[in-house]
Image (cartoon, rainbow, N blue to C red; front, side, top):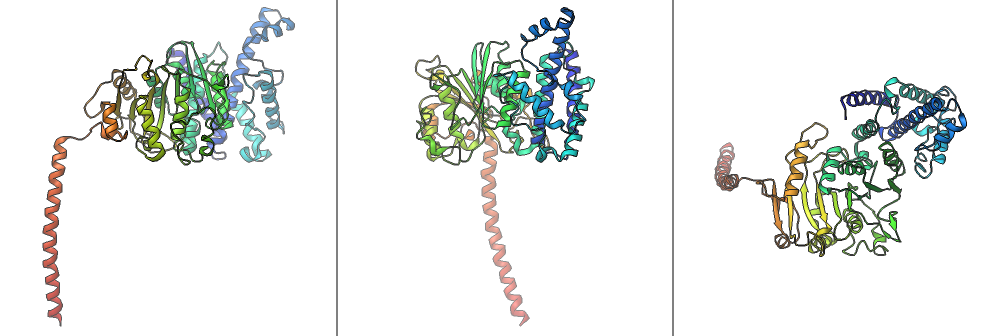
Length: 508
């Protein structure tokens, strides 16, 4: 990104975050994010459309028929009466919320399949979200005024597409910080997305999938790892409003061809090809942790046979997502990188049986422990599991029989509300994994036989020793010393009891 773009980016960020003042204190951030992001989208497509229209108008000397013929060849269509500027002129109307809804419906209808359903969960005439008529109209008028500022001119000649896409992710990130536990539904912190993408290591031509894609930022980050436009993106999201964010995110990043589906991945997968699960080169995800009531009752009849290794417990869907991801990764070549709670590494019963099967099949490639408090939605430490289907018989890594364990839990930037992985932390993790190196108190390369001897337990401290042997000796000495002190205390207590007894006698 050029210096000019960086300066423009900062100006846009400041103006966009200022626009949020319209809703702060009156509307929950998890709700008003949808209205702000839709306005950003509407303003962007309006500026692009208007600039291209003006170019054709100058070229074809006001020949409206030729101008419209050319505009039909554009990336999208903006019907008359639906642009930001046409709605801006109506900003004082009593029914402005309804006018916005109608305009968005027309934009959807004119741009199927690119935008079909994107705005269906956004209601600018909602009393429950935006207040009664007077308050709602005032907030919407302020929003129009905020987005009409010079800093938010998104014309292609003024600002690059990269800047627009970055602004969208900036807003999503800030909304996540303000949304608390609800943030996990739509956003993965950027440093973790970058780490996942680098561990997955997509190559040119890759088909990349996120079966719990949220707002789609992890997919975009994975695509950016390739360094070209030679890739295809696929995702599925169960929450309607978040699905809409993902579709807009793809559009603003110029990935119009991305296929994002709206449905429950575990119970109703939509990424299907020839009546079978689509197969991908790369599958990445930050699925909901230990999802309760994930659909265990339907798993035994799963027509895609995703749960052949075992059915996860009803109250914990972690291995359900893992099973799905592995079955959608291409045989003998596909790679999976997934974020999981630590319980996945050692819990027993059905989860233990699934874990055993995955290890026996030689699919597990790495276990990486991360610091606590990296997510807005939880303070618990998490881990990343990397599965590599090229380790299967017939794959290029079929002779690999070890697993890389990394304890990266102590290296991070500490912040009051949320910790962060620094670029150097990400680089160290990725380099250690790719080189498969053992680093004192940081990583170990463990043969499968050792893991099996440990009853298939993947708890990282079993394999990466982070304590000093001298400190261990000191600890043993301390235990001995405590026991001696306890003996001395018992003697003193006995003497004290004797003194007290004598005092009682003397007082009689």
